[in-house]
Image (cartoon, rainbow, N blue to C red; front, side, top):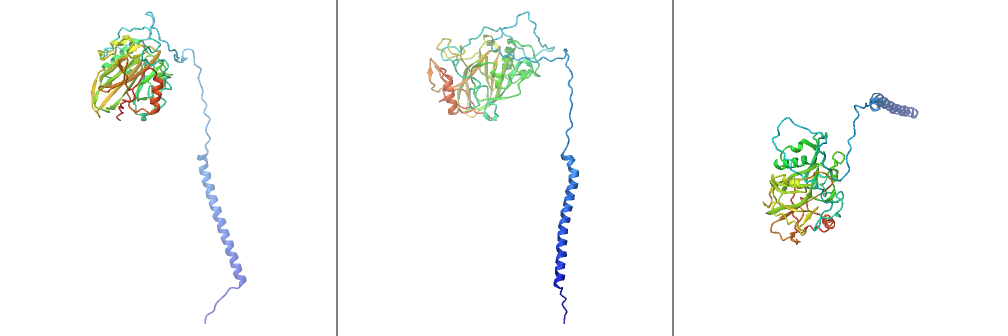
Length: 388
């Protein structure tokens, strides 16, 4: 026989009440403990989160007359600069060592070039503004995008040392540097002696209508550092030949346009008569001097040497353009393949532009609209893509 003890209803109610109070007390205690923990953590972390920034006081000393820095003035004029008189005092940097390279200073014809593009099949003064030319971003002196498929290039200022200090300059210096570049096959260090603007451009085609010489530095975002005279832009890279054949370049420029293939002269154009002595290179196939000849800024176009190339061949290409005295500039470069049935006008073939990328329909239309009387062939365009 077993005994069962059973609590009364009053006792059970009292027990449940105590249990409820214990549960509430435990919950409140837990909340209080968590709050205390957060409070303690806040006291330690708050100084690291909220920091009072101390006030920095700077003092600028007054400049004396002897130490006053004169701001460099950039000339915006576009007229040709006359040569300095013989009695003028010029700053000249001399060296006490002999250079391994002789820089010729040929006689220069400083006669003022024509302000027009000449007669016959010239570009004409209405071929658009170089700044807006090539809305696809590949016109002018090149694209800012490394993915544009163009030859990388930099602009150099012959009026400044490589650390940006002014140096003596005259048109003869330009000719000397250009001649040395040709002699060194663009593999030497002559340009390392002069200021290089930091921004590079990527040239897909060279088709720059007549414009101010300021546009060269401006395209490279260097118009504030480089005056519009005495500059050279050099593009260099490797391209792949699209088809086997015999090719030659043709075109023109103001003042200087030069092309090399694998270190050998393929094309040279010089606006000034003094530039004829830059090298021993004598272009073949130069058109006649009459009005029927295709001209550029009043000068007949130059045709380069014929070069045998094979499909898939990688060739190193150097393209240089430059402005000697300032004023106006303009450049364009075509390529011709022997045996192609090009359209003939006034006894001369209508040729395609040299390019490293295919032209879009919009670019073709733009070039056709802007080229006016100077016709270009877009049916026989060959693309020489960049090899990375």
